Length: 71
Image 1: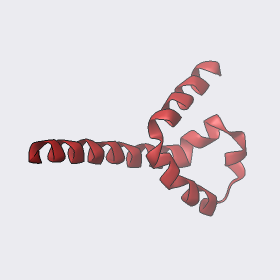
Image 2: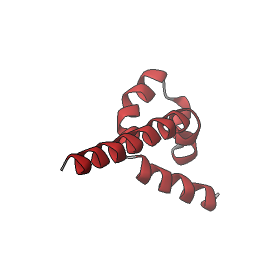
Image 3: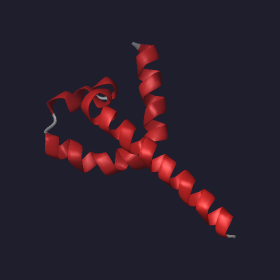
Image 4: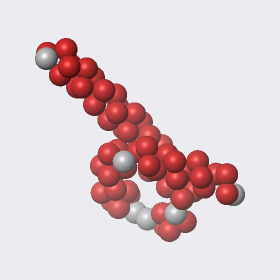
């Protein structure tokens, strides 16, 4: 059981680690490619959105790739 818990925590740490890296990229560069309104947003708004981006990064990554192929 201990091995299962360690594996789960490792996967969870990797997920949120990738989310943090993606979140930093997305908040400064990627968000404007999906939503043009984000170009005028303040840093406080981006800071409030950051936890949600970290948690849902696989979905936003898919949207980011779709927006690049559409343009």
